[in-house]
Image (cartoon, rainbow, N blue to C red; front, side, top):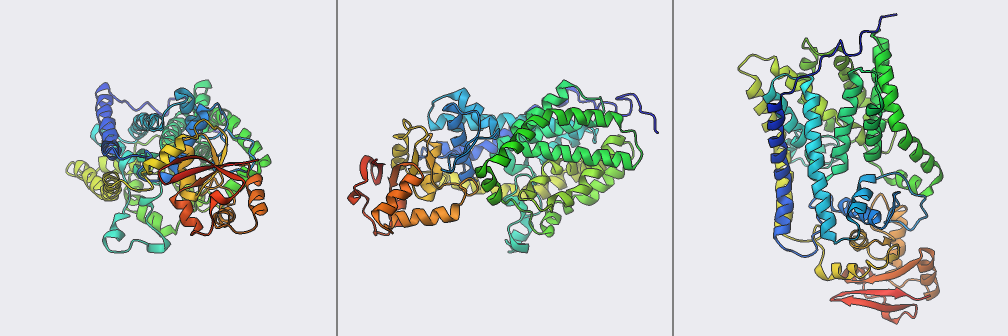
Length: 527
């Protein structure tokens, strides 16, 4: 049996000077400004009905809807996009807490709070990524470069677009839709993912340092599980792989096991609670069944990461890397292809934070290059990773400068939405697009409105279409309203287009006008 060394004797702390932290603060501020410019432009246009989002608008509306639920008093997540009974789960807690912090407020206040949290999460990820990279790289300029790439970098997805092949191997390159694969998409619009990534990096580092754990380590992993449950599950799987690698290579393992046990203890509560709820909640099971975030063709990952792999391997081979980091890096990167193609619905999520590790190893290789290369190599990496990011950023600027749906909703529609703020928990029937936006302006539920969260969406869309087209008898339409406990029916341009002129709602004796703004009308369902 190998003797166990003193807890931290094998891994001296990576020194980070006060000057480095000050430089990092400026870098984080610059990234915050860069990612905020398109949103500021959208606000500056003074166009009515700005959702607060320029990409991923459908999900963005759902985040504001979760904040409204928190403001209404909820502590457990229950989707506003389904009328199916729900027990509630310990998910999306940061959004619920933000809503509680704000209380009843305007839509603009919730959007502002969302982006302030985004900037704060970005700053925390800057610190976490810098500290993580510092254990691989000693040169401050290279540490900052790696952190910048961790926050804003993308892959080679721009190259097939440049050559006229936007859908190679069955789809778009990962740069343009996968926030877990790189940095920019997450920092631009997903603060819970950014904060989860920061906590994951801190939590992994704390375990790898082999200090035996403790309640502080458990708290980090508890916070990670509450912020982003899947990242906590992924982190624990990586620690299991790491422990197996230490055992297989006959390295000392007791300190790593003790720290991993503290990590597991911290994350266990939320993981076990949500697993138990999942087993008894038909809604969560239906949501998981249709929330398919599948891994694309392997060539997409070679396009994403392949250009860094030779440098990353050279950085891993370079002498001087602490043994825990060497073992963990190899275990993580070798297990990544397996994790990405497990037969699970959330495959693509298992790439979370691997981008940071690849950058740390690649910059470590550059640091060992002849004096002519490190800075030039860093600039070459930045120039290679920048085009996809600039394409996405420029696209967001264009959306901001030319207000249109879905990023901007019509002013009359928003005004009608706001009349429902006094009807918390009421169920509203609307066409899909309006159903997606409505819960972000009023704390109500809708029948359809979100791809994954509306369980049974395909069948429900057909039923909603049939209702607006006047199919079936009046009794059958009333039965549909009762089945979903619908209190209000929207009647605007989208619903009228869905109807195709086949139905006149004012002729229905079970509906009465409840409000009208311009072309948008709200109908109350009579008992």
